[in-house]
Length: 133
Image: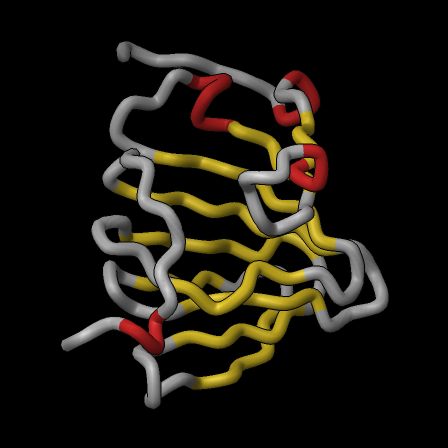
């Protein structure tokens, strides 16, 4: 990949509630697909009040999040060592492989979170409570 430029409005929104195999039931924009990134997953996640991505971990992928809009309750850390932290716009947070993380929109307004993950592999969520250290 050399370079690519795309505007958010030009990336279609996918309603994940229409895809049975993919929880959660949120709206997302696959920025990585629009840009053709090979080594990085890039998504915009849209949360209505109360919606969440449940606490999970990945085997290989490191993820970086940035809150663009809304107020979120974050659950981060290894099983048994989780922290609950409130985060608003301008907050970054990251979770390495095998480290649990999840977030819920606890505000009254819609929320938007930018998520970056590497390597760009299909790495389905794992239950952090079942991981052996």
